[in-house]
Image (cartoon, rainbow over all chains, first blue to last red; front, side, top):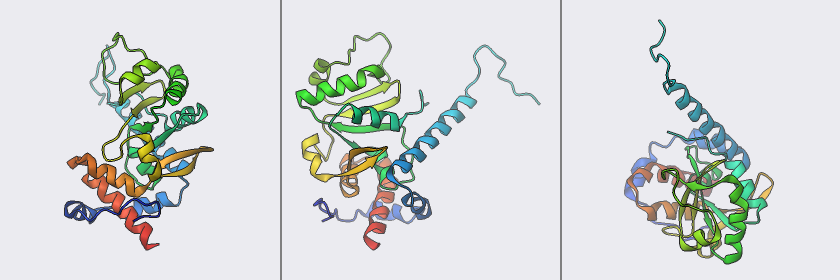
Length: 68
Length: 164
């Protein structure tokens, strides 16, 4: 049981196999932040993703060929 | 393609200021627990009481919620009657993507999920967030193969927490 009474689930062998590839350094950095800071970091990442997608979108009515 | 980047803070503040009973689940809850994975929407389980649905509608109506992916011009009205008739809604709002869940697989209703939440300070508001252990349970109950790597990270976070 965890501290709030939810039963701890038995290990799933498939998930256990995936766990070998988890980059723990990434969440160690997150754990140093407050919960609000973690959400703000997520928000910055999603905003960056959006800007990158926008940048790749062809401009309507324009010439999409790239300059040399 | 992302229609607009979701303003997680704005949505959480809107719901909190409106006095809405809600529980943060999904990718944002994972981020709160330390996950480094991205998510594009805010998933919340909301209380289905008449009073809470009224608060929900009052809080979100200014954000012009509309069914995500639906063609424009549908006779969709975000009001208490619509919420009462439905259960789960995937919405686009002026602050981005918001999934309103009356029930969640593996967790049930707001009242059923409430004992498996933590009250955390998010942007100055006391917010209910599903516990890491229950979040793992919800992901397992969903049974989606694409969640395996998410589950691996969440369980690694749980292991790390129990070690420390």
